[in-house]
Amino acid sequence: MKFIKVKNYEQMSRQAANIISAQVIIKPDSVLGLATGSTPIGTYKQLIKWCQKGDVDFSEVTSVNLDEYVGLDIENDQSYRYFMNTNFFDSINIKKENTYVPNGKADNLEEECANYDAFIKSIGGIDLQLLGIGLDGHIGFNEPADCFEKNTHVVDLHESTIKANARFFESVDDVPKKAVTMGMVSIMQAKKILLIANGKNKEEILNKALFGPITPEIPASILQLHPDITVIFSEE
Ligand code: F6R
Image (cartoon, rainbow, N blue to C red; front, top):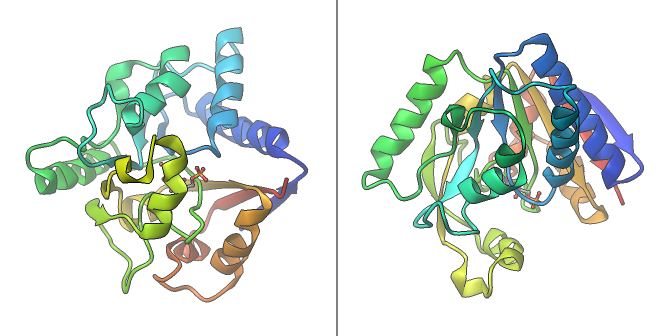
């Protein structure tokens, strides 16, 4: 594991953007696994700048997102599809049809989950997976549980996750209670993983996840078993 501690959010974002753009420059048709949340926004902003300057080209990239709330329309400004469009895809030269986010409005969610995994497999898996970490140690929406969930699945969000995400909604009651999330197989089979975290409040869970016992009670702890993971942490 490569652990990089940086001074502030800007440095974290810049370093993460460097790693992602290096990936795309070396392999223009990379499959990028992407995350939402507040942590990667600066990374996406930096990548947008470089793309608009012509320094990085996303025209051959395919992206697969980690997760989506169940029940939100893609036009809903809290859906993860909306987040990705407005914070990243609309401002770079990626082909929209090559961007994939689980469909949380699918009539048959089980089928949607199975199809999502089959699709990721069919395109050869993920080259570089960008991850954030939740305060309870979740990655994607793989919440603390008795066992690691292998496949893309529907998950009941934990109370702490609902509370943490309430900041994006009018009230805590508006936060969806379920989500579709990629499981551990697609994440762990990514050729490279880039985990970014920022803020003092993430330090404790990050330490537990990266240096404590590997347990499904801290889902991110499974990342210790990945052969090529870079972690960038800013405590500010
Ligand atoms: C979002 C995701 C989540 C977030 C995590 C941290 O797609 O997969 O696991 O990465 O909840 O969120 P922030 O960055 O808002 O602290």
